[in-house]
Structures are given as C-alpha cells and as structure tokens.
Length: 220
Image 1 (cartoon, rainbow, N blue to C red):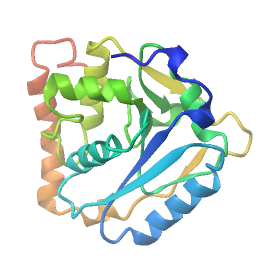
Image 2 (cartoon, one colour; image 1 turned 90 degrees about the horizontal axis):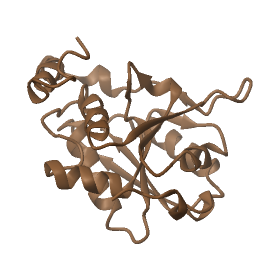
Image 3 (spheres, rainbow, N blue to C red; image 1 turned 60 degrees about the vertical axis):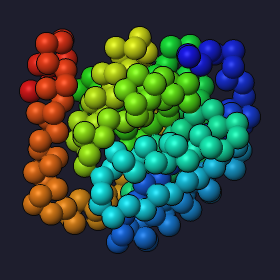
C-alpha cells in the first residue's frame, strides 16, 4: 500500500490533483488562488478540482474532492489547498513531490506544522496512503469532525498509527520569497454560533475516539 521511492520519478511526470474547497462569498479569493496555481505550475502535470459547498462542512467537501480526483486516470497524489492561499514559488510542487519517501504519509510545510501534527490545508498525500485510510475507517477523512478543527489532528494520528511518517519541508528557504502567501478567508467570518459550537465539540470527539491510547491526552 505504500508508495515506494522508486515509483515517484521526475516531479513533472508525477500527476497530482490539486483540491481546492471553497464557499459562497469567496469567489474573488478563489480566483486569485487559481491564478497563482496556474502561473507557478507550468512544469507540472496536474488537475485542479474545485468544490463549492454551502457550509455543510470542510471534511465532507474534502472527501468528495478526493473521490472525484481518484476518478481521473493516473492521479498519484492529491494536494489539499485552502482557497485563501496563493502559491508564489515555481518550484513549490517539486519540493513536495521530492520529499515523498517509502513510508511518507503526508508532506507538510514547516509553517503548517502544529504541535506535532500537520495542518491539512496545505499538504500533499500519496494516493495509496489515502486509499488505505479509507479502507481502514470507511472514509478518507473522518466526517465526525465535520466543520474544521481536529480533523487534521485525527488524520495525523491515523497516519502514524499505520506506520507512516509526517514529513516537513522548509517553505521559507528563499530569502524574501516564501513559498506561499496566506491571505485569510472570508469563510470564518460567516460561521454561525451553531457552527462555532460544532467546532468546539470536535476536541471532545477526538478524545473519545482515541480514549485509552497515547493520543487521548496528547493535546489538551
């Protein structure tokens, strides 16, 4: 199930699906994001898939995007990209692809590393890894963590439990030119009180899911 290093090949021959979830009201932000992808990805083989959801949840949207991505021939990995992130480095994708080794579960930039787990809003995951996650739990990302928060922590734990490594890359190795710019999204300003409460509950859902394991008290 693990993507071996010998299968990776040259970055420009490694086909990636770039998944961009978005919400109503973020149209200008989304277009800016897409323009930056196209401008800085001229040497790569990729497909962009956008999914607009009406705040029914980030995790269900990502799962739908992954399912759609895997219906495209030759997709070897998916790159999850929030719509408020603008790529600024033409070598961005090769850095992620070249970081994949035999037991890599996810590649994440240092700036998106959060207390020993990877923030999934800007990361690359090999297809065999995601397919294994679905086989084990019935879905790629666990949809009990519906509206953000703790879904990425849960995935980081699942990957490590399956024997995969969370790989970090330096996204600030060029002076005065970071790999990307995080603009900030309008979507968080549109959350209702019920949605905010739903996100708060995700912490308790995580602890219940991993009760009795070393992960239960890892993040308090």
